[in-house]
Image (cartoon, rainbow, N blue to C red; front, side, top):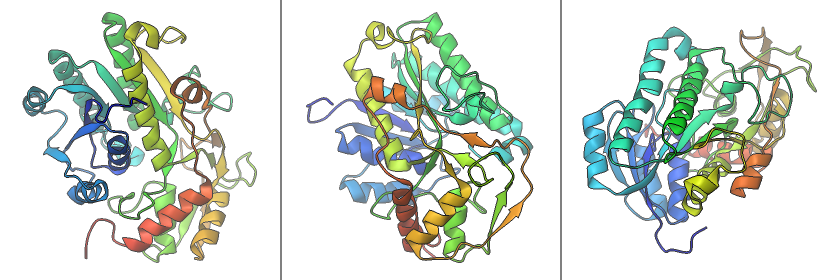
Length: 357
């Protein structure tokens, strides 16, 4: 990392969200100056208030939609950004199936609007929040960045569409430096217990559902499928602690700072200017293994029942994380027990999430 007291200024779109808020803390700790841009459609202003308290400094916050090009222009005109970390996107798979146009409009059109404004202000460094969903049902494990890409739902398709756009943009103009971070399964919370995952309504993801069962908000967990070819018949995923994930974004920015556009991609097979990188632990954990660990850590029973497989679900998915280690000098440090412990700490301190009542 640079030894400058204050590094470059970064725009963090979707910075009030789950991963965005944790990344704001990591960026501040690494010396970056940040501006958060978020429409609060699936996040809370309270998250930014708590991040400001944790870092001891008020974060500049702009409430705005990623599709609002006039407001984006105002923000870019006020600041000299080195680059953008782009989290702003809808992320519920089930909702994307019901409302595909909403997902393509927000996730794809919104990114195009952002890229157009970035180009207008000659800000051409981007770290994009992508997803392991772009790999679909993998042919081989662990999944490498060169694996074929295919998606089974509009959410994944929207992430993949943005990747194709970034690839084409890089080919058209080699002054762009575009890193696409493909996350596996982010879980956990900040060790302080002050910020964490606060899903709207019934959780879509496994870990917040488990924690809400543990605290008594939900009666029991449904496990979809117990007849997969895995260690115990339940699905296997690559769970990664959200604070490790946040450090991956810092590593990506540091990498962009340290390289030139000609050097940055010289040792990859990707198109010049576009660099996909997995962020995962490289290890798979089954649903039952996660539940057992959470129960041990929390001291709470986690009632569950088995249900039929869901359409589109796959047996196993975990990352090859060698590229992140070799290029960014990054690797996940925290264990499944750490993930469960920090999730339980957050849930216990905030039974209703960011809602005070």
